[in-house]
Length: 292
View 1 (tube, helix red, strand yellow):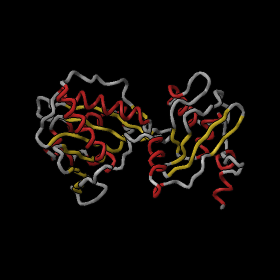
View 2: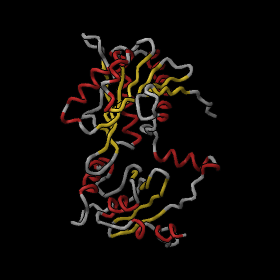
View 3: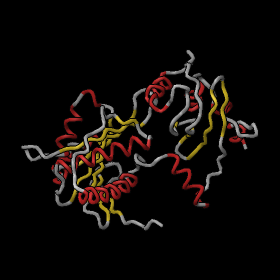
View 4: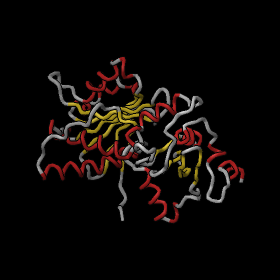
């Protein structure tokens, strides 16, 4: 059984939409949530001049899908580390997509190049495996070479960082299917939502509504052909998830969509009503379920 954790969220500007510092009992790490619009004010935070790892969060301008970039920052000759790197991202015209940054460092400035390379690599692979966000990194970061002792130390840091990331409201590292399994194992959290089925042309899929949206389950078969009626958002999602679809149109991973209709369009390759086409095993449509 997991034990409770004591977190301290400090609203540095006195508002929940401003700069937030997070610490955790028995953890030497420090984390900051920084709105892009308040990056200049964050310059006064001395800990952001240290070496660390950072995350940029935003959305795809066409599909609205969540996006994330994961990077590392070392202290420069001018004595500035994380904040300097975030400022470079802000000044880049190509990176106007992100709205929030989250930075991780330590209270005693103990990270060096080896540590942040390992953390960047692990965070990248954890986020990619969870599949909730489109990861904007061009390639898998180099993990570097570390000792077994240091690896254990950093893995403990990662365990705490995952908790903090969730406390900030980002489920970057939480796999979709594991969440559903947890609901089944804990009766007080069991979902009343039934598994739904879709059949359209060559497509046959299963999915389920959740509090976060609509999940299409791995093993579903999608229609590889896209009709002219399909919008740009669906086309971009097909490009984004290309590596998660095999040559026969079988999904290799669970996928989360913001709506049943968005999920139906992705699966069927056409503009479809999610309320009409997703049905229970007994043939009741999602629209009928909602009316009840």
